[in-house]
Amino acid sequence: VTESSEGCLCSRTSSLAARTAVQLTVEQRNAVLVEMRTLLASVHGVLGAVARSDSAGIRAAANASGTAAAADPALEKLLPAQWLQLATRTHQGFDSLAAVAGAGRDTVVARLGALTTNCVSCHAIYRVAP
Image (cartoon, rainbow, N blue to C red; front, side, top):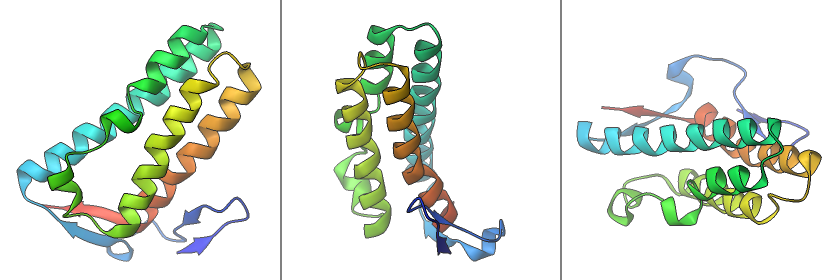
């Protein structure tokens, strides 16, 4: 795993074996995947709203993945510290994105790009194992 000039921790290989396996039960794994799908839906919603110049839509999509949408604290206790740091920065990034929803396309897209660096980094470092 290397750090790029943008601060992104990116794997030089796509091998699953190169990533740290996080052992979870099927129920815990499903909870993590539901949260990840929510984050991805927010990214999709923000981009669609940006294309329509819809600041209310940007705000709504971003709020859906803000800190209020963070994982169950009991589940968080099972996750590695670095994962939690990346997840916290991601949720805070969505809060920040919602706050600047009316600031213009370039600002919103730049914020979205910055916060998805956390997603890319986490997925380069970890994999969920049942």
